[in-house]
Image: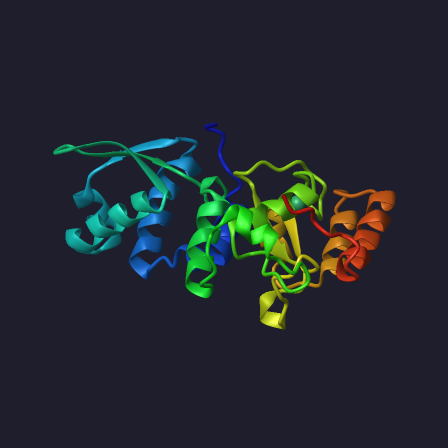
Length: 236
Ligand SMILES: [Zn+2]
């Protein structure tokens, strides 16, 4: 993992828009995470040594809830515990995009669906037009594979740690979990697109120089193809 300072603006947006709702961080969890992040990664350091007492004093909180928040953040993968002793904790603090999306999706989908996580059975019995492509790992992977591990919007290469599924029509506007509405994207595009229309977001990437004119035209065609069902993912 690199020690380079992350883009603080992007980290803040990802925390607010993406990480906090998906991990269901409480107010204390969020405050603790933000404070640890500020004193580690935003200073260009991966690791931080601290005591619960120091953390609680800085946040004007008592030590019990702060200790529990640190424990939850470790369990959720936002912190990696390197060492714990009487003298204090040593943790590696992860920025939001380093916390695996699969883990986030898992937490999200567990509450929403009751479908079994059975790789082979999922494809055998599936009706592709009615399938919920967020429901299990096999179907989510099929969307990432269709995009060939490239962000659908900005075309940058993605890896399993920096990719997620994006709703072309956001869920708040009744977008569904069909293969016609889910694309594989980088975390940055997912966070920046937010509730904007996908074609407007693509034009913005073009204006910012992230796509050239030919790429923009091709992405707009892909968007139409997606909605009309031409971009079927292949199921294993
Ligand atoms: Zn992207």
